[in-house]
Length: 215
Image (cartoon, rainbow, N blue to C red):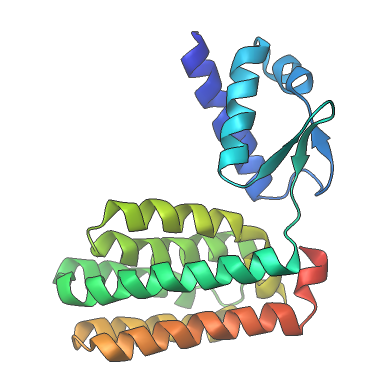
């Protein structure tokens, strides 16, 4: 296996673990530990860790290693703000460009949640939620929006899962259905307003219910 494939393997595995909070925040990972774990040299370990720094999951601290980041209050506020900018741009384009097949797929995601009598597996619901929002970006036919939103949703996975623990998945699903209805009726302003309201309520829940303290 060459260095490139090792780097991809290490990067993919570490990113998934960071997204799902396998590692505690404010702890360090070192190149040596990663290389030993994956049976590689330090080069692919370093390349993977540096890429995760670029994406905001880690912070390189000289002579110590790579710090697993915990968002500050201000950082999380800025992520919510940026997410809203990206999602509003996505929904505006999606309303204009959505096909019948696109709309049917969005409804199918809602159906997946409707079939759950109780949201017992938060990861499954969160994955569906992420697929819904990213699908709208895909419908916009702008690959930059898709890439940026995918990264934002990964960064936010931990706070969103904690939010789900304190809320009903079915209640959180209702705005998704309303957004689809706006897309079906080609109501750009209504879709934008519903999207903003949906994201603002999520932000409010996270900061009002002390979820931030556990992120």
